[in-house]
Length: 229
Image (tube, rainbow, N blue to C red):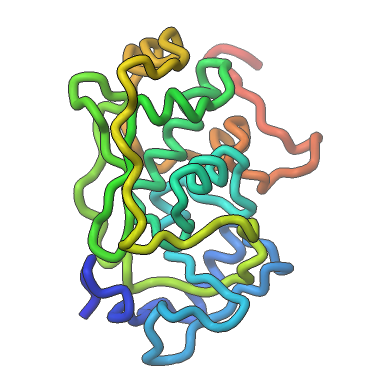
């Protein structure tokens, strides 16, 4: 049975129709050759040239392919592979990126580090808040049912070659130094404007540059306020 301590015990329950739905709904590039896992095969070890992707990353974490530069930057800095992150950690990265862009600012790695630290969660990793009294979100679910049992594979070229897989021998990042320099104005505004970590409509993700599902400029979403024609 799958558990947070048993990555090789995660057996797929996603159906072929379910995979087809995710490919269409989230515009997963055909060039990444998404494939259905063999029956009774665990997610790990991955087939050659592939990585496993959990479906809940799309419908809960606002995760999209291709990955954003900020998400890649966060993971490479912390020396952890995308396939090792649990949904709770990835949701925090995506929420932070959206929140910064909603404030008209580029997402800032140092500000993210001021809010979060990498921690281990069984066979996976996550980001935990450093200070519960200084948080950039107001709520996040503590349970996502059966997220480990629904997955598929895509070509591993969807992640950069320099993205490494963290081993248990690698030390977690140390505490921040007392003189750690970061954008304190952005930090304070993110706390003031904190919101829920949740799934967002696609047009919000497009405007936040998380999703590229509408790549044509003519289809780029706009906001219309009540009363406007």
